[in-house]
Amino acid sequence: MASKVDTGISDAQYLVPSADIRLTVDELWTARQRQMHSLHYAVSYRASFKPELPDFFIRRYTSPGDVVLDPFLGRGTTVLQANLLGRAGWGNDVNPLSVLITHAKTHPVSIDKIQSRLDGMNLGANVDMSNYATFCPFYHEDTYRELLNLRSSVGAQATDVDRFIEMVAISRLHGHSKGFFSTYSFPQISVSPQAQERINRSRRNTPDYRAVKPRILAKARKILQDGQIDAIRKASASNLLTCDDVRNMDSIPSGVAKLIVTSPPFLDKADYLQDNWLELWFAGIDSMSFSQDMIRTPNLETWKTFMNRAMLEMNRTLVSNGTCVIEVGDVSSRGETVNLDEVIVALALELDRSHPEFALVPEEILINQQEFTKLANCFGVDNNAKGTNTNRMVVLRKR
Ligand SMILES: C[S@@+](CC[C@H](N)C(=O)[O-])C[C@H]1O[C@@H](n2cnc3c(N)ncnc32)[C@H](O)[C@@H]1O
Image (cartoon, rainbow, N blue to C red; front, side, top):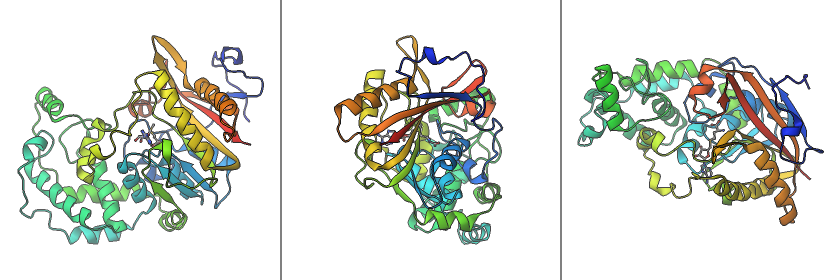
C-alpha cells in the first residue's frame, strides 16, 4: 500500500471502534478523467462512480471467472469493468433503465451492424405527433418525428444491435453540444419542459433540426473506439442483471458473489425518476411500476433502516470469505456533516450482534483523496469539498 497523505483526517476522529479496522487515506487511482474503456463513458448517470473504483477492488479481490455483484447497478460501471477483466458481472437496480443501459454496454456490437440497421430504418415516416407539445421545448418537430420512429423500431425487437442503438440514443437525448438531439440543455439530468422553456428564453434558443442517425453513429464510433467487443461479450455471457428492490433480491441466489462493489443512494441527494424522465420515456419504462421501491430517504434514520436490510441481502449473496465494498460520501444531517462510512461500520457491528446469519466484518476504510476535477463534480456526487474529490469505501469481509 502506498504511503498515507496528510488530509487532516486522523484515526482518532473516527466515531467507530477502530482497533481492528485499518484506515487508508491515499490517492488510490488516477485523478485523470476518461482513462478507462470508452464504453464506460457511453451514458451520463447521476451519482455514478469512476470505473477506476471498481477496477481497483476487482483486481485486488477477485480472479478471472469470479462473480462480481453490484446491487445498486446505476449505469453498470462495476459490471462492465468486471467483464473487461474477465469476471462475470452481476447487477441489480430497481430501475429497469439501469438494466437496459448495462445490458447494451456489456453486449457491444460492431459499427458495421449499427450502420446497416440504421440504413434500413425510415425515420421520416408519418407518425402520431399529438404529444409534441410536451417535447417541443427540447426538439425540432422533425427531430421528434425521427425519435418517435426510432423508438418504435428499436422497441419492437430485442436484438443486441437494437438494444445498443437504443442505449446510444438515450445518451443523446439532452446536452450542451450539437452532438445531442435537443437544443442546449443539461447533460446530466433531464429538466422539465417548463425549465427547458426558461433555458430557451434566457439563451434566445429555439430547437433546430438535429438529424438522429448521424449523431447515433458518431457517438457509437466514439464509445466503441477501444474495441474488445468479443472479449466483453464472452465475459458477459455469464452476467445476470435483475430489477429487484435491494432489500429483497429474490432473483439472486445465496453465496454466489466473490465481491460486491457498490454505491447506495446517499439520503435524498438524487431524484433518479424526475432526473431521467426523458430517458424513461424513450425506453418506454413506466416509472410508476417501480417508483414505490426507489429509495429516497429523507433523514439518516430512514437511510440506516434501508441500509440495514440492504446489507443483510449483500451478506446473503456473498460467498464466505468474499468481500463487500460499499462506497459512500459525506452528507449533511441536521446541520452536521455525517461520514456515512462510519455509519456503515456501526450498522455492520450492530447487525453482527442482532442477526446470527450476518457475517460481514468491517476490515478497512479506504479514503481516496484526489485533486478536484471538474467532471467528477458535474456527475452530481455530493462528496467534493474544498478542492478535493473524495471517495470513502468500507471494506467488509464475510467470515
Ligand atoms: C448511487 S447510484 C449507483 C451508481 C453506480 N455506482 C454507477 O456508477 O453508475 C444508486 C442506484 O440505486 C438505485 N436504487 C434506488 N433505490 C433502490 C432500491 N430500493 N433497490 C435497488 N436499487 C435502488 C438507483 O436507481 C440508482 O441507480
